Image 1 (tube, rainbow, N blue to C red):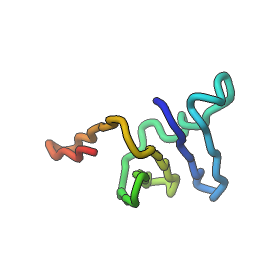
Image 2: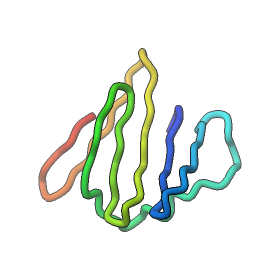
Image 3: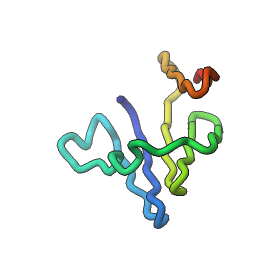
Image 4: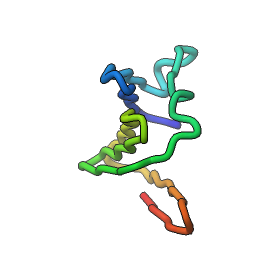
Length: 80
């Protein structure tokens, strides 16, 4: 992963990471494993994934370049 992400834990504490500059620092993303995504939100240059625990993962992008991904659940696709 490149760029910046934010993880808001269920307690509301925000952990912000620059994936290119903060090498070898702890990430708490393992807390999101095995959890269902219950909602998504979009804003310009930001995709938010909301998890069943109330945690949020925000993925930021910058203008330019090509970035994409997909989420598949129950034979439904979300492409971004």
